[in-house]
Image (tube, rainbow, N blue to C red; front, side, top):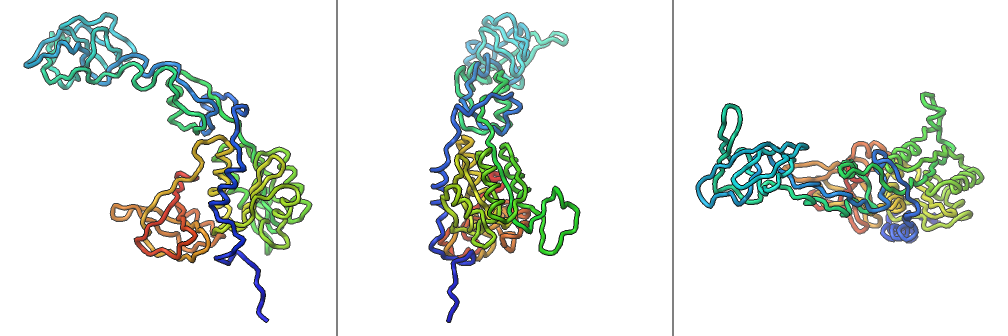
Length: 429
């Protein structure tokens, strides 16, 4: 009699597997962003990487006053000749930060530096390369301009870039270094941001040995160093959340329940790695069903088929697979967008674009696949190739890669030159 085989992670087509797009929709429906009540005010230098809770408005005009965009001479455009040349008397200099106290009369010009305030009576800057100065000793006493001088050129008007009251950073934007500089330029030293989320995380597995205790030691047969928890720490650290490390949890129902309940009492989000499959020692999914709500458990993707999602009380839970690559892929495809959404970010989805494959890529239909790739320029065009063997336990494949190659469910393989979607790591990690 033939063996009656049960569905497994080796199957390409498994009816019980939830499509990735439906899983993402369920997560989006389940996750509610923080509200204005969750805001706090922080010093500007502490706002980098935080999410803006209230729109930031400019208290001033930028530029604050009409000024020169170039080094040259401030003049009245009415003095520009219709043809030929004209000589203008130089009456002083407008420096950046030291304006010329007197205005200009017709027939006069003022030496002006970039950023210098335009003197009253002037509306144009003739750049120094396009005028002919007339000296008396070392002093420029007049300049000659011609009809090629254009009215209104090289002048930045007050409020040209930003007007008083303009929103310069919308609510939901992630503060970048450019934002910090812009906000500082407006004289603002404090920013309203959403509070940091609290994220608890742990690894499960009797075979795991924590670096905190076993670093540098020789492990017994069957034991391995716990790497997933440190990978999770690094990925979460980039999101600037408050981290709660619960360590390595033994493979027992009681220990798993205790860890989940402890985490749910203090965290907004709980993340585990391992213990979400169907083995006798896999207690995470079973315990989640007993003490919380299961949104989904198995997905039609590779790597990362066993991925548990749900809630325990008010805390959102993500049970990631145990394989190192699957931990990273499922985190970036599901957990990170969910955390960003909860943080109040406007942009949560990973960036993707299409390039040509430089190599043949093997795949069978049935699941979406996230293969590790190297995006590079070849003959002036961006192309991508895989990092080689794609086993979910090969963390080296993530280290060698600079992108994920996203192959849709129906794809039955890629030939050299075929278009493929990629997610670059620079916009992901």
